[in-house]
Length: 113
Image (cartoon, rainbow, N blue to C red; front, side, top):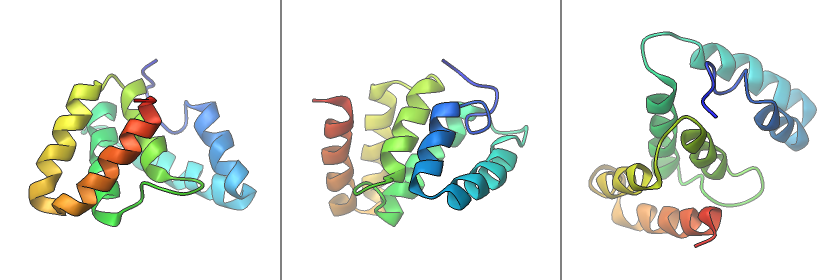
């Protein structure tokens, strides 16, 4: 299901953020919701950008993993698994092969592959 705002319209995402910490969840929802509401970049592209940021930050493992949330967000916004895989391959050049290897491992877990 595509959302007009991938943060403010996704109640499951908001509940997940609140489960990490209620104040953190509220803060993330307000701030990220405003950023995701900016009009010039579409929601799917923003979701793919967040995955690229996760690659360079190495945020793909552990409780509250942003990578898993962002992969699921991208899928909800219409990205395909093939597009996410191509993005990860592209990120090898700019983010590093070793970082991307971990992301492919996490992606396989997220997808149940």
